[in-house]
Length: 129
Image (cartoon, one colour):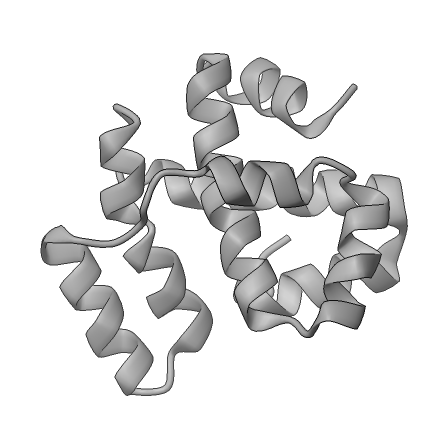
């Protein structure tokens, strides 16, 4: 089962929402990691690049501003995830869905690529698992 199908089945969302949300989160991971580390993520999630490239623009709104403030105060993972709220709203998803996507994605990456790759992604996403 690929990541999109896993998100659809575990979160009760449609395929477009799953692709968009996963793409925004994987895009954040791609932006934060070097090419070598992201290549390891792509081994676990072959569709990672495509999802990231097709994702709607993240950010915007009050939650985006709060995310920017959290980032400036050093709460990197939390602030970066908060910035995704605007993009999730464009998909018809509540901002709190960001927090529901993260553990599903982390578990999928760990299952496909092992704890090492899961820990790399977890570090970018604030260490949640």
